[in-house]
Image 1: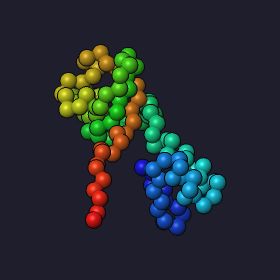
Image 2: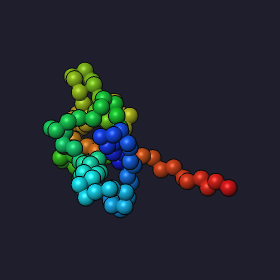
Image 3: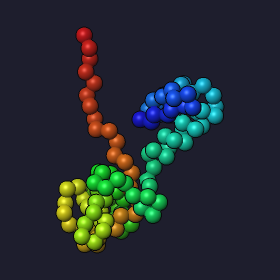
Image 4: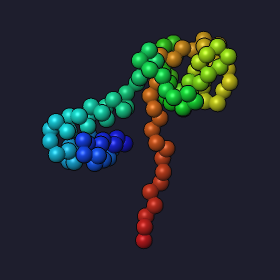
Length: 114
């Protein structure tokens, strides 16, 4: 989901490109919303920026092909990547994080109102 706020402070919520196409008032607004949505769902190289300390994210490795859920946190040597709630850093396991992306919202079943 993407929330876009215009210059008047009005917020619009977009779930996908179809939602963007039917709700944007202009082609320029549509392209801006599509770019923001694409950037919200992209891998972020660790050289570009790191997630908030302790935030769980999806991580990709330079030397392992399967992504994992982990976090970047402080340790005795500064900062380090960890899998889940583990206390042993990934570097100490010879695993090197190259990029990360925010986790999607957890699934919530829709409840029908009667």
